[in-house]
Image (cartoon, rainbow, N blue to C red; front, side, top):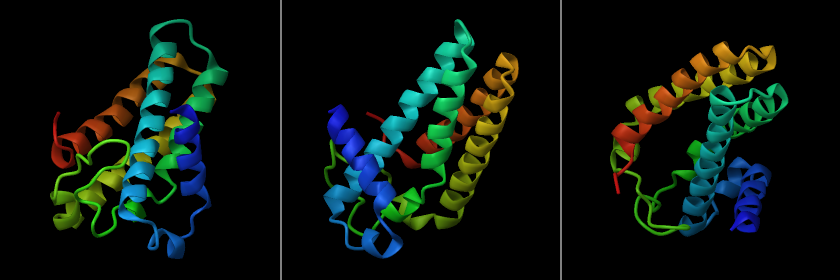
Length: 152
C-alpha cells in the first residue's frame, strides 16, 4: 500500500493541468484519496509531537508535506464522472462538491491558507503555537468533511 500511495502522489505531482483532464475517473479518485491519506498521516505526526516529545524537525517535515499537497491543485482531480466510483475505496465525496462550487472554493481556500500558516508556524519551533495552528488546520478539515464527505 505504501508503494501504491507513493506512486499515486508522484503521479499527481508530475501531472500537468492538461494531463489531469485525461486521467481516468478511477485514477483521479485514487490520487485524491492518496493525497488526503498522506495529509492525514502527517497531521497525526504533528499531533504526536505536540502531545508528546516535540521534535521541531519532524513537525516541519510533516507541515511542509501538508502544505505541498494543499497547494498542489488537487481540485483538478474532481473531474466529471468522479462523483461516483472506486479508487482505493468507494468515493465518499458528496454531490455538493460539484454543485456548490462557491462554498467548496471557500472551504478549499481556507484549508490552503491554514496549511501555509502551519508550515510557517512549524518553522518557528514553538510547540504551543504549533498546537494552536493544528487546531485551526484540523478545523478546516472537519468543515470540509462535514459538508462534502459522506460519513461511513
